[in-house]
Length: 182
Image (cartoon, rainbow, N blue to C red; front, side, top):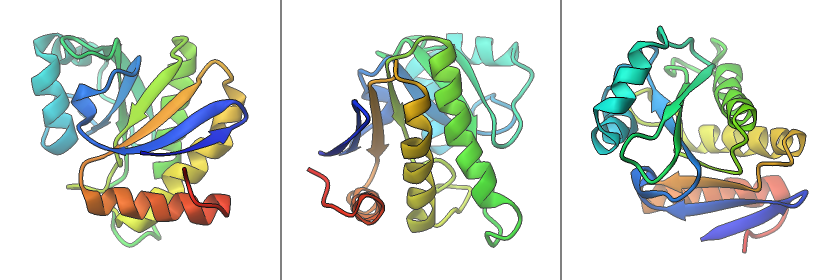
């Protein structure tokens, strides 16, 4: 586990399964339909059960760069925040801004629901093809810049599925903070 403090809140990096997190909310790397898919999205829908899909159907989809919330169904998390990241083309079609927006909107939605702890996956780095090193810097920078606006959020956990992704996020965190994460 790696962690840093940001104005009283903790940002931590762990290797693990997003569906097993004990945070108040987890973030789903969703597609625009919000009706389930592969990767993280499919895993969350399977683990959370049909209640999440039923609630998603009522939301009418979600634009890229935005986020919407449902209950956590059968998950340990009370809420699932469905964030839609961009499909990566070449980084020159607004992808960095849209990815940052997905993280920022997730924190805004969490704060609107008085969430104190939230776990993120690495949004857009699976089937959407975003290079992990670029995505990690955007994700971490956006969270570090946005978190001070929401003092009620005390914990942000990035849950990385592979040792490689965890190492990439650790390196990005070290570069952004100028110190090794503890």
